[in-house]
Length: 311
Image 1 (tube, rainbow, N blue to C red):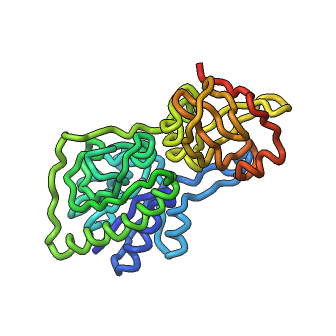
Image 2 (cartoon, helix red, strand yellow):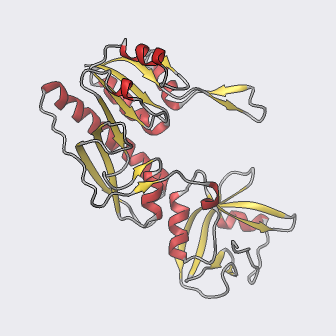
Image 3 (spheres, rainbow, N blue to C red):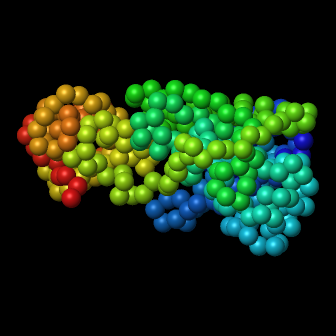
């Protein structure tokens, strides 16, 4: 089939590659424009999808928006059978959604209708969900509400991070999308409308949410750490002898312990509102990630020290 692919992050790359390997004709790849790179922003950094598309010899388009009549006409001129959308990052107006002969298929990183929206993987982990998955749906103007063709589930382990879950879902999603395209080509694809029971919204992660509040339970904070690892990272501020600095926690473990929230019990075990959180992997500002043991070689954190609680 003639396909327009629309995606931006690394999560979308396996689907693009698999579509090409299955022999479909990708007539255009839409992705977000290159971002400024470096401290001065003089260079630009293309999206992972753009890098993959150029390696595959595919034409790449990076419009800032698809809302204009000119962009809608340019999109329609591809005469695509279907558009495949994977974490593209721009809204698709009605004219674009209706341009492909068979509509637009979206790969979404949750089992819909749970966790519609921008951050489904992070929200699932933050909520303590024990499973998640991917869905292939036909897109509508309303966000992530289109009918679903296929879905697959995976378990979320108690220590799985967002990066680990994202990598697994990217590969699973690539296989699921190519199955959907094969069924569409044969005319056997079927869509089931989403119900509203169990629907939830995965709003975008905000900066205030990434700050660790020691007054919360250790389990809540462990889920926060996992959900935000490695980026943007859950963090707390601490004075290690040279003034306050920001420290990201990339891996942790809830353990038994009790003291005032934020009190260091032993090495890098910190009391929480309920139980305590053992910090296993951290990252100081401007430094690479390191284990707790490596961190403690270069920073003195005495038992009894108090990390600030968010007010």
